[in-house]
Image 1 (cartoon, rainbow, N blue to C red):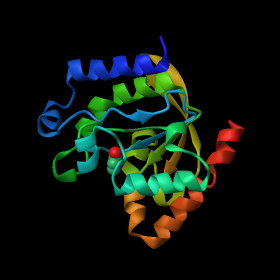
Image 2: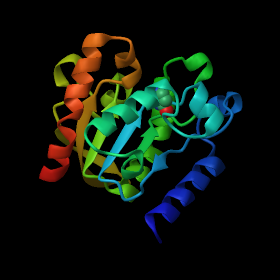
Image 3: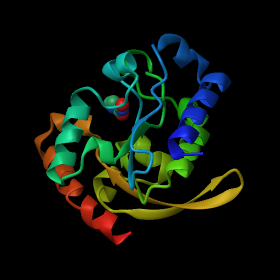
Length: 194
Ligand code: URA
């Protein structure tokens, strides 16, 4: 089965198993993820916002536009990467995703990564970063890749995590913006190294 077919199947499984029923009830639709199933790098945000909820695609609003700009600055296109979120339904009024909601979607996210098998998992923001790196201090750890071991279905898997600031946080903060743009410059080198 192709990776795309496996991802399509995983999406159907989520729809059948109905994690986060309360969120599903207020959201328009599941925002599963999009991009290249053979990507070497997967970006993981927090949860869909209003635009994403309407379109059914991740990072299609202002933060997504900024992300595209940063990708462009290192000659990477959206079609080259895969992008998804920790929580795949929009939380009401864009509130932060709750610990239970992150926990419910976690096994599906790990399965999604197991299908794609990226070289690098770039987390966007604190929620996403701390899901993989419990002791993450984003102000100190951003831009520093870290290899971790993770248990999925009783099996140990290794992932290289690159913690980054969230583009939405950096959009209106000049110094964070510069930092995020600088951290992005390391992506091509990392991809070539691993
Ligand atoms: N912010 C996120 O964390 N994810 C999206 O998909 C859009 C904005």
